Length: 459
Image: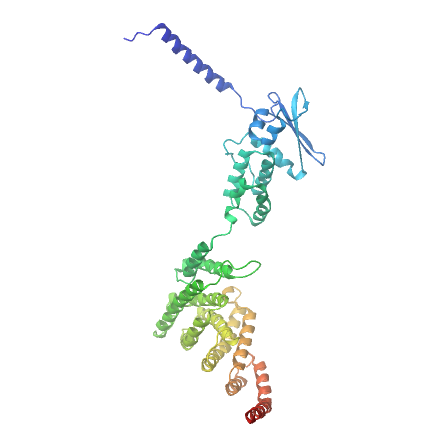
């Protein structure tokens, strides 16, 4: 049995009563709120040059604690007028477009606790307006909450432009907002480029084709010079990696060619048809990248050597609807290869250039009417639509390649063209005209050269 002293009992009762009173006061205490006239001791007047003038009943303890501007205005060193039952009055002038943001800041002074606030920003644009006012009024908690919000949420392009105009002039305290827009180190760009080029030239499952196409688009964008410089310089390391990736891509293409040539009925397997078309699309895209980096030679040589096999595979394939698309994809790649040859991007010996004309000229002239008939008749097949500019460009390329051949080879090609039923495309009229002119004046030109040569030998 415990025996307590009388004084101990009194102390315990006192503590219990004190705790009970504090709890009661805490439960009955009402938090102060903006606009509560009964507890307000400050009036904030927000005014604009357009005559807008609104009064807000506030509390000095909140304003002084959370805003340097109001702390200075309510200090003893600043003469503040008194109105409305001896309340202090602080006037804040602003532009009409800033008025609502000033009101929002006043309300947030009562809501922001330790930099945290519920979603009261109502979007990026509104948060930017609030942030500018918070910086001007020196409200660190609201600034922190604004920065946390803007740094975390997604931006639309127009909002991003607005952020770039506003944030840099607000000081170091808001710099975290710009973190996602800062330039990336070259080493990081190189790493993502290498990972992307390897994926873009791989052969993933068909369900990942959209991802691969996106990677190819971004690689092309990274290397394109538009209003801005390319994202990375095309140095030897980048060129070497791209050449290796494209080399592996062409090896897979060539292996599939060999496999198809060994089959009795080509393209009987729908999966191989899809793989063949996919590899052709990848090679067409690779031509764009190689051309930008000025490293087309290896692919041009490989395609030239494989041209006979490519044409044979397509000619001997079982006739299906997919075969038309395959021919289109083949022509797209061949056009880029021939362009590199025709305009001197890649220099090949005469024999190989002549071989390319003899292989691809007959193939293209027969394929075009077939492709045109399908693309015009099938409105539901946008994948088979070939840009008319590509046909025109291919025609000009053939003319350029032919005109760079010896005149005897030109005569042979033109003779065959004039007697062919597909004389309309490619139209080699320009090549024919140049050949006629050169042939006619050749004796005069060469005799002039011979005379000059004799004169030089006499000295």
